[in-house]
Length: 227
Image (cartoon, rainbow, N blue to C red; front, side, top):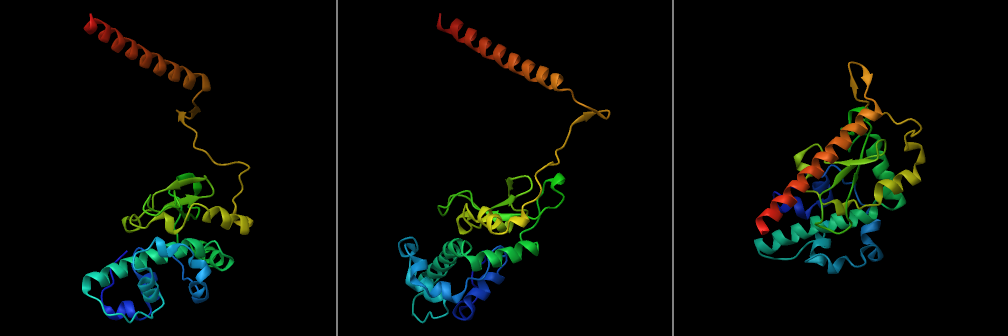
């Protein structure tokens, strides 16, 4: 996420700036009502440095005097705090609706798997613990996760979306779930003929036999050295 370029950017319309910054396209706007409800912020004051200052910055009410270094730390805390709040907000009815709209608009991109035929994807975290892993993209059609296509998304924390969001969205909007009756799979062929299952089994057995022979050779070598 880009740094704030000027003091006026962070003291006026902070959320508009944040959502417009390159790399933040996956985020949705959090309602003022949600931000104003202290119950929704439970526990975050112990996870975010300069919590109250960061909240003031997000709410466009920051009027504190501080040096440049402290100001930079507060700005960083505000971005982190918004991400943590975002993970909670997108599990609410209003948050799910906003993310549903972004999903339908294709704001999150499409699955890189060829046989998914550009099926839209959703952001997902591999962990709910911050700083554990960057955000990934989940495709409901092949039920797999992928790295985002652009490098600017690699710095977005997966905890800002959480591990439950995509699956809760599909529970609320079940019509988005693709037909799983006959998933399209790639079938390897040789000169147009499918590779026989026995041939695949024979290759696997041969590979295992070579691995075992290699282990036995290593064991014999160790025995010779120990004598």
